[in-house]
Image (cartoon, rainbow, N blue to C red; front, side):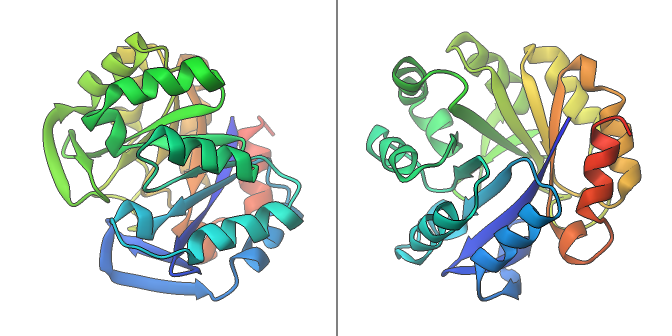
Length: 244
């Protein structure tokens, strides 16, 4: 199982939000490159980077510039999402050097773009982010809730050729309440897809609990606030995720 340290970008800074609320922002660094180098030095296998401005529909180039700087100095594969809503956006992110693109809102609004992206780039480079509030899919930076359930969307994506999804329980994200293992596992079983768990990871016990279900489709876990608050040490989380 892979541990993905999260770097959430807002106006070029490394921040964390609580439940996706842009007004509940904590800035952890003015220099995302320093954060990326920190996680790389502690043994990260991947980085999970999100353009929060893009996800919220806000203009600005600072986050894309930060991504470019990180790609120049960190020799790790990066999965990147947030505001990626067209084939042109996907191409731009991949051309900059990201290994994988995360599609969220576009998977709900324009699923044909997901299918076309998989045809062009292959399923290893395209991942769908399913963010849910009380089981219902949330889009546009988690501002809007749709009638779709997470399971419904996952099954729809599987039919389009998607192989991997990131599942985030919005109500737990940034809260250190513990990951929603039951919902994550249900999604993996219902869809047959590989699932990366996200939202609320609070301790190494969350990593152990998810690792126990690796053979059932839990492929990875994204850790954010727990790393920044010091509740989890990345090297220990990786050791546990790898079965140590």
